[in-house]
Length: 242
Image (cartoon, rainbow, N blue to C red; front, top):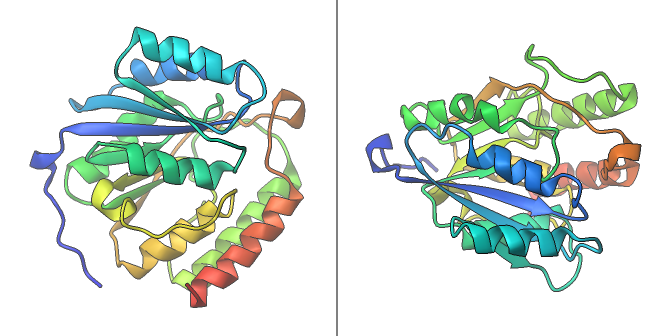
């Protein structure tokens, strides 16, 4: 189906949705970086979903929200995963554009203008930030890189897209694209699921090179090999079912 969408003249607010789980060492710094990011003239709201953290993440968020009314905090009743936190964030977001920001320091909010540009100038409905298009990135795990390439290739084969980084954490949507989607994945299966579903909408999708400062497991990285298996399942499931 083809979509008739708003022009950029109607874009007034950017909602940055941040899922957070046990990020007491990073969450305040990330929010500060988001607050100082250049949003190309758009008003900013920050929607943080605390996924029932066991550390001080929730308390830090409540303190920040009391200091700034643009920060809106929602607490999950139990730990449900990144995908479930994002669903909650999308439902609560009030912006015309919705941008996903991870709660660690792997992705840099200074690159918001590059990510927002294709949507605001009317070229795109969805933007993916790609870690593999030539921007600087921290050198880490080879097998993660291989797994990402395999999952991206399989996703592309089922969606007929030519993405270079389906698993990227930086995804930006017009709100009328992402809000109506019936998303089901609770964990990192969100990435292939949302890719499959926006592909069916014939959205105009752009990729933008982004820098990437990946974390090691010692620094708090959470995704593991089981999530890779789940992503493969989601690629196959959402390619032909649901």
